[in-house]
Length: 172
Image 1: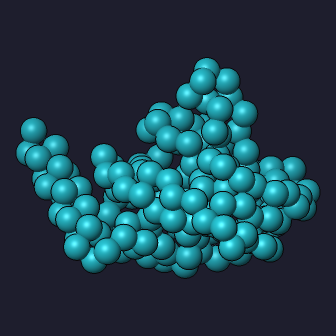
Image 2 (image 1 turned 60 degrees about the vertical axis):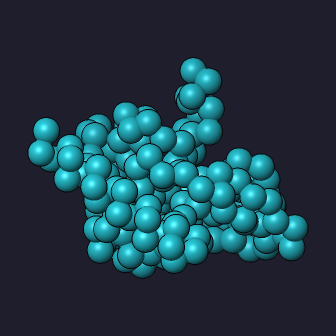
């Protein structure tokens, strides 16, 4: 396993629509293992493959690791089958938009289908932080960042802050 570099705005690759995965094989599992290690090191709770420069429909997630437990989850070719009309606001952040947080309104519940690490097709319901996180990560697969859900002013301000922080870090 290896820790990979995480792409940061305004990297144009983050706007790429990721391609479906044909088969879950050892090379894909190696990518997912690298993604998980990268996410833990960042630290984050979810990561889409495009965030490490791989334009494939793959997500890793672990909503428990901050509590000291590790319960990694893998989502290959995830799709939302149903979303509730009821929405909920949640303050989101993103490893590709470091140190920026803002409230995004998303469906409170979703039903999704995906292929897991072993290549099995799974259908399950998501609510709470799981629903927020899976929708956030699935947006990445379509080239959408959480800041794209904000007003143009807030989005532009967020990108400017990240650019400035990157310049200052590079100069140090």
